[in-house]
Image (cartoon, rainbow, N blue to C red; front, top):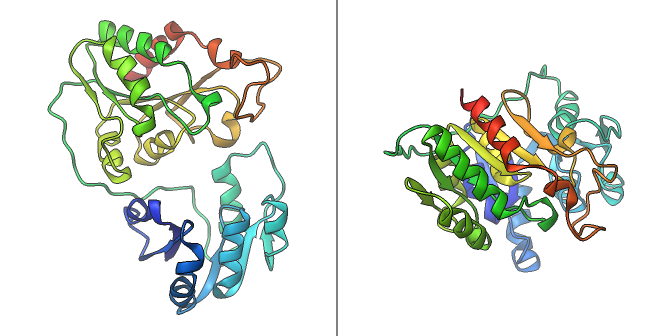
Length: 290
């Protein structure tokens, strides 16, 4: 199986054990790299070409690839749907993203099976004592970010109740939030914000006993690795993009405005996140650890 992905994710996709070849898509140098990309993409004539994203750019890749059958999701972007010779599924907004992807897989001649995430990362054994709790306080949307002070209070309570070793995870843009959390904790605490690649992040997450996080990339990576996730949701819909399956848990408010899917809160205070109390997150985390 070959997988086309943007260049920043190629090393991560290589960690999937059933992927034979990764074809990098140069989004930031599209025109300069277009000819060699097309040469590589079209060198193979595939039996099936699947677009599992439903974006216009991924639909264009599907259209340019050579294959007997080309299938995309029916609930894709409007422009993308025009490019699919064949679609699968229905416009089921309440279904989880993984279940919607399964609709495309079910169109293949091979029988579909329950979702699996066959990933392998280099071992990075931690010498710090268990339980080991990872905290990822960032995401791409400011409206999805539970306040750093709330994460800090939860982490402080968890250390007091469980003697946990805390690992702070995130990109360089999350350093400020992670520093705020770190300053509220006693040892052992390891601040890795901005210092891990995606592959190294996977190595860390697979050694954790629990991840406390927003709706974010590390959340999905932890799920794929089987690390229990406690996720805090605000403007997005857990039923569509939450941690998939057991033993994961979600904490969220139940306000009339949820989910709004806005990158800027219409009320200016992200009240959906402020309604989630640190003590409730602590209680749920302790229960999951037990």
